Length: 602
Image 1 (cartoon, rainbow, N blue to C red):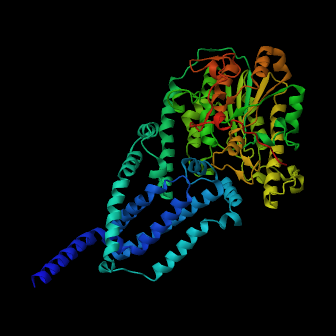
Image 2: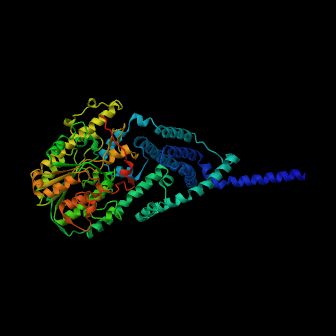
Image 3: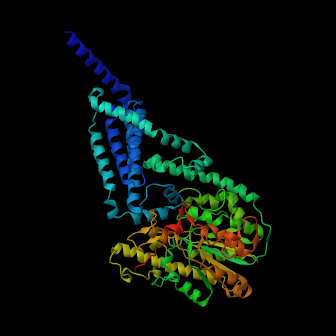
């Protein structure tokens, strides 16, 4: 009897231990939302597996803890309210999972601050065009189907109202869940700590966390919804930068100005791949006017110029600010070059086909919008601006013609084109449809791909016409015209894709970051400024990056200011040709490109 009692005693203790481990209050949230928990975990697992940037070792534990917390919060509500919340959350999670998986399939990158930035700075028509160009049967029939299929099964099971009572969980399963919960908490503590610090901190906190390497995005921001929130937070820091920029502008000053170049015209292109220009050896007649001016000696073509960033807003910050990646601080702590030109006595004008002051034309007044359309900053930069956007860039010429009455003896005129922005076939009138699919011998491309390629080259040809018309307005003046796109674009060179994939291999970098760059000099300018002409010819093969274009312009104008650095001006004899060109502020472009050569197929 004693043995039986002893045996029963230990069995009862074991059952008590199991009941304790089952921790009904502890695992109740999972039991109460078991279908939601299982499917959301599977959804998160799919995203983790498909995303190559995510740390696969740690994040599965984080996912368990995160879903437990969500289920715990849901269990606090009555059943009907809880059901509504689960439907809303499921929709949100599935939607952003589909978006992210599609981005990975199409562009090789998950949701990032750069992607969110591109969305925020893209107007309605451009967003519609980009979406239409990216949605193809090939991309839809991809891992996106895993997410869609899981969603369909989830809906079916939810309609069946599958439930599990508290005592339906097997003991071993209960022990496993409890162990996973404890382990997940231990593993996730540090990432969650830094996530909280980032979301609750200011811009300085964020920069410190980045600079000191205290967080790893592949661990912390491992779910699409986290990446979205992180991206929105990082982009929101632009508001702080704008306020800082205002103070910088107030304090900035110039010492003197010689007006070495009386008329400086800066033409900023969009998404221009230099390897589709005849100036750089392309065998299609896409830039006949530019080629003719180069052969006449009026166009100095620079051979090795890259952009600092492959996104418009960041590229513009770096171009317009006197800040470069070699400097301390941030771009907003340095003045903008139009501000210094205006203070020096130049008349300044901005004629843009993207960043007009019609804020209703954009998704939001974000970053680039604030950069140009904030009233205080705009007035500090420009005397006059155009107010309307147009379907085609040639209408900017009419805008300029109506504003040129305000020109003075010395002028800085900035044209900002729509250029070669996707969708390419909408960038030019139909009469410029010169290149056809039959113009290319590319058996590796589909007919649809060839249509895109032809449209890009047609847009390049039309862009050449726009540049011709701009130059014609100044060819009798003492003027220089500088052409510099914000970034390049992948257009089927050495690959079977187009756009701006965020996979940073040599081929993608070469197409997205290498840009055409040239300086046109009128005959009058060449006659009156022979020393400057000589400097341009000496500089044309120097390695250069667009974050120092403002330094070149300041030197070209003869403006003396504490912000000017001869080391950063390629027209200066003191220019540093050995400078590391850090694209996106973190990748050494020249180091990555060592030994790489792109062969353009046509």
